[in-house]
Length: 336
Image (cartoon, rainbow, N blue to C red; front, side):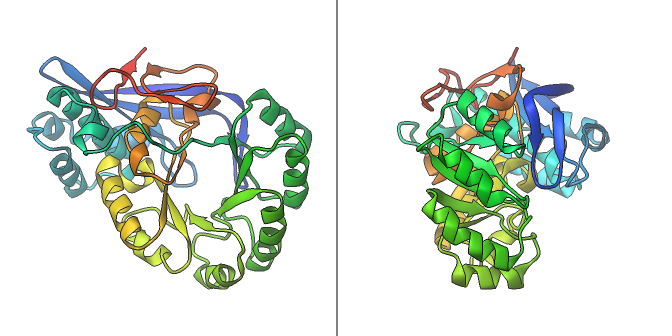
């Protein structure tokens, strides 16, 4: 295989703020794997919370470039195992794993969801994320993008006020993501009020390792609780089962589609709802997420919708939230 790594700086339509950080641009690494006239594309964005940069990913991938290019790609899962054995971080593995899956599908002449034995006819609707800002700005962002489901980022002293104000302007479903910002007592209190305001579930209310707090919250919460920062890799799924009602899988954090498929299976066995979320990826990463749609209960794949300009074409999300799968194989991705 031929390997090529590309850096893009994705510009966001609005400053994106969550409880712990803000940014106007998003660095992303695009991995390109080529074989027999086909090229597969994968993506991993940088992330300060996990101390991952484009430069750190590129350095560790370049260190094993020769081994990657000499690998005989017969099965993406075998390639994933090879990358794990080489000691790469999950973010770097994700970019390569997504590229390998896209390439594999193109070589086989089928989209990934078809290779996995699923149909694209039925799928959950993605939410659209409203990042933290002044209440007025958050209302403005919501009005700018009419959508059936909004994910609202919280983590301030005015969280309830924010949701109350947003509710005045729409009847859409709300989901709330606190990104680890609350304490158990606050979360219990907010749950009751948020349920009255039409919130569907709460994502990662407490700090990722506050298991005692989650035990208390799980007993008292009147809304479903979805793990994000508490569920990073495959080994975390079983632990989350006693504290959460579902999990949010991030391909970058778990290491790509290969482990995500296993995580989905395990979560369902444990009775957990399954969501896949994005990390402000371009259409490269979003198209990979979309291949999993038929297997999911919820999805957050609005990353490319938050950008001023995209770098690729692939899966499209229409203004009515309909997903259009391209008439192409693999993930259906092509760089612009």
